[in-house]
Image 1 (cartoon, helix red, strand yellow):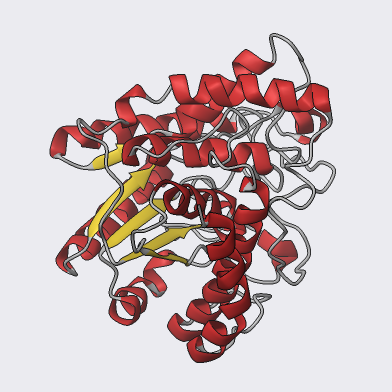
Image 2 (cartoon, rainbow, N blue to C red; image 1 turned 180 degrees about the vertical axis):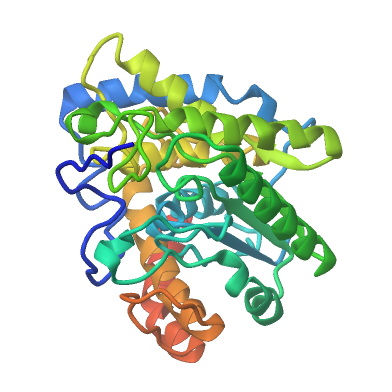
Length: 351
């Protein structure tokens, strides 16, 4: 069979230094029509998360929560929203320490497509660093979101699916054996619409660009993960929330998307990623996807800044093999750097 190429797109770009974008600085300052649409979309997302609700939802009392995932987690938007919502709702309670250890390009399957990152490096495998993460961070709770990269942007295959399943099983086992709890998130939604002219059809030997129906792969991965609830796993459906929200929004705007490159959620998308966990923990988010506070945008931005410094510090401490990630400061320096932001956060939260 032939190998077809297309205009270069996300999965295999030339290597560039990774940057952690501002969470709210531009993306939460919407034009009015888009803000109204987002409110509708986010309301839909909340309505599609009933299975994510605990019988008696309460915020976690864990001392330390570690988030694992790929670039979607590394961006950190949904993690900042969750911490902000928890601090708004419980201003007098010591909230858990949120540690973002998402790593761009990473998989839990151990697979990497030919030519990834322009041939500069293969995709990192979570299991290369998981043991170090658990030893160094000693989490009480792990939140894991994998799948987007694990299928390599190829059509569904039994072999790749099995590697995703075994990777998730091993992740779950090692976290539980460490003494921590784990919550699995289904993978984010792959949106073919905004990149439809750069996708590839079924039946090729190799995919240097994404398969046109790649979200079918993520749907299969998500359904398998959700089935693990029967085994007592806690699994929350990010994929379903995003997919349903996009479908509903397109009834009003056929070109609506939460990810202009098909993969990486914008701020609205990150808010929807947060919604199943917020629901599970009984946290309130407004129709704009932000905590219920008049200065919510400022609060999320400050927390995102704190989390970003902590993220880079812990990525350096726990080590990884992915090029292009800035070195972090020491944890002591992070604590000093975050003092001013923490004072501002406390001032915002004062009654």
